[in-house]
Image 1 (cartoon, rainbow, N blue to C red):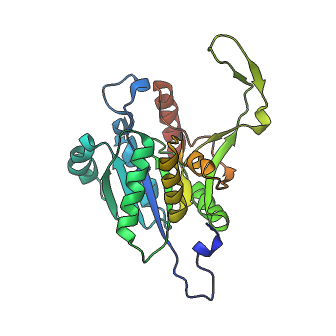
Image 2 (cartoon, rainbow, N blue to C red):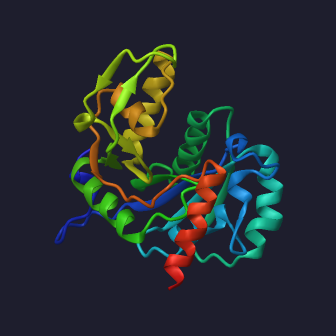
Length: 250
């Protein structure tokens, strides 16, 4: 995917639709709670709604696709979404067995919405990353204009050890070459669908969307992520989230 995906001043090419695909399929086992982490409440608002509200308020997001387990569809539609007034069109989609399956379902739905007439840029984002900023979304969209594939990432600051058994160090990795991937991961729709097709044909299972493009030999650009664009996974993350909300309110 190249910059030809995007409109340029003076030509007749339409600006592609920009669609946020928010994936919320976590079971919350590490959160040690009966309530799934995406539905836990932060200062009166569920985590997932806080995430959706960021994209809903962003001027460059045209549509949203929310992917959740089939068992959560009714709750999300009748209780969660019904309680909040979102202005951006939102499509609710059932996920699959794995995250990769769920993202694929979301992307397939996007393709179905658009048909063959309109190109699109998709922003795949974790439903439990509610502190992503509008500035980071803009940065990722701008970088994807030039490359067709972009993710935010933070360089690892700690010394990283590799161990096969979890008890003994096998080697120390060069942290100058190590980065922690974040979301939103932004791609041209045709590019990422082609990469998913290749993964299915080769039996590849990736840990994020960028890894699926890497497997297909497609270069992915990195831009600096944000320290507080955290993924809420553990009880300690909720403590940090509470601090961040207080910090934003002052």
